[in-house]
Image 1 (tube, rainbow, N blue to C red):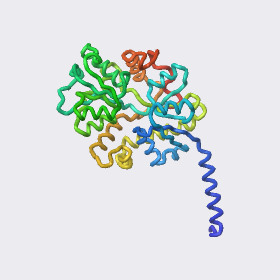
Image 2: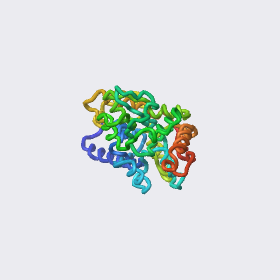
Image 3: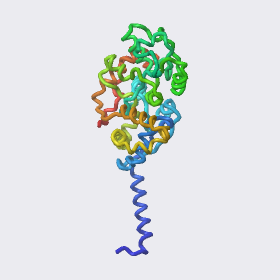
Length: 327
């Protein structure tokens, strides 16, 4: 039997042992955009202690936006960020050796009011379209390519486009200052919850344009140097990430703790729409040898977006998807 007088010493030794064990865990610095939906997965990892389960000391660094993340990664301020496969490929082509593992398939789509006469992309001729991003936004390039394949026309010449931030696009559409809106999935979910209709998701446009399956738009992105020097920590993080994805895909209860982050604490319709659309974009597995969809999508974007979108590249750069991990 343990004597009471020994307890303080025992507790001190035990605490020291735990501290040593924690110090021994590999550390990974992950930059996360403060307003991004990626927070939902990170919150799930932390709430379920999946980082600890996988033996990882995970440190989260807040980022203002995607550009801030790219700078943080390139300067070594963080080990991992979320970025898109086109940026990763361009960087590799320029000699900046970064790679990624898929995180999300979600893109966006074309939205219209419930009483709109726009039923197909052919009906966009002569209409005003609010577009999230700029003239070389991927969704806009995809829509133009699809419009051309259906009508033979040039959408930029046959319709009026107004570019802006995602909230502005939704505001223009809701305020009847635009006939249609092209926005990112999470903003479209808000429009759906308001009763607006999606004419066509960008993923379906890609399929119609010959892309075999929905490509991974976003991925956990890191330098080749980090993949070499922090391989163990990176692998453990990716394992935790995929486990969180599986939970978010199957477990409704875990979503209740995310309502505030989702901005849907008091709106059940919006909450359900955001949850369901997020689930539709979850990556369920990863084999770096099976990246045909990304290669097809990149070639299409290069063909229709040109140098303004992809630089001088016409094909996905080898090594864009990290070969050191699979799930």
